[in-house]
Image 1 (cartoon, rainbow, N blue to C red):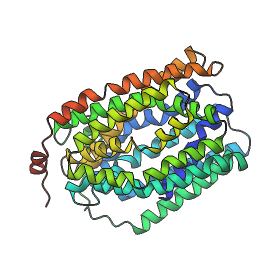
Image 2 (tube, rainbow, N blue to C red):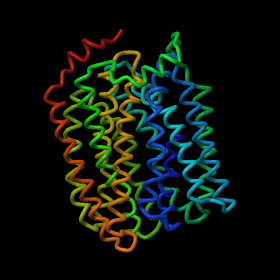
Image 3 (cartoon, rainbow, N blue to C red):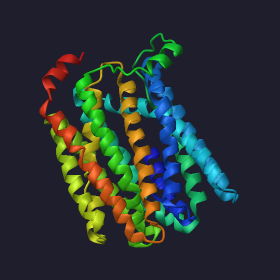
Length: 394
């Protein structure tokens, strides 16, 4: 909840802050792909290391590095020395922090309950986290307009280190440390093989790749469109806060539905519903429809089954590694999609012709629609009983 608050407080408005500094969408896109690049080369290594040595320390260290990065954001903004070169370095720190902690975090949050309830487990985590997102979103725009981005950065740094401390003192890790060699872990992190149901994981990774590609082309441009449509950071933050309210309950509900019925079916239906609404908002400057889209938690019925199914199809004891691979796939697509979004925006000079932003959104929607193909294949070949037989409960 605490780190959800911190992340939402900062990221709800930071890209808007960069936009107000007159950076182009391409320049903002380049900054956003830097953490992704670092994640590509190191996430699996840290994920595998966490599986064999214990996940707790990786979550604590990664979150602590996040806190340090946000504190440095505060310093450079407050002292007036903020420039693009410093932003590049700090985005690099964010990427390192994510690489260290992401695989372990997804593994912990999908295995808190017995394995067959991975959807409920991850949904419960997201629901609690959404309380923080909601509060952070509601406050972010108002505080940014009132006190500025330096203040936001400082509060984010304090909340993250507090979250790391609480988790470090309270969380009890049941997994026993296994013997390992960092050299072997490094070598294994570059293998193409995966520990689990290879065919199902390939389809999950394909869905993840296409979903991330389409979403990253769409989302950055859409956030700027909302900002322009409503005219202030305060209004933008309020809309994000409304979105967070529905996310407090919906992830848990989505997780329960996924565990009781079919993660694969829920995923297919979620992608179709979200894409249809994205298509409308790609061309419409409709305030009411935009608010409705942000409130209805379409993404939950995609993200929850995708992440929980990744754990379901992974071999026991390899959850952090397999989740890290999913993160790598998503991050690679995010990097490419964000770059495409920025390049297309520059081609059509979106800064001086804001209506052209719809072109970026149409491209993102078209790519996103392609995720239905592997989602349909995964639904067709779903084998929940076989999945439980391969990786049974103790």
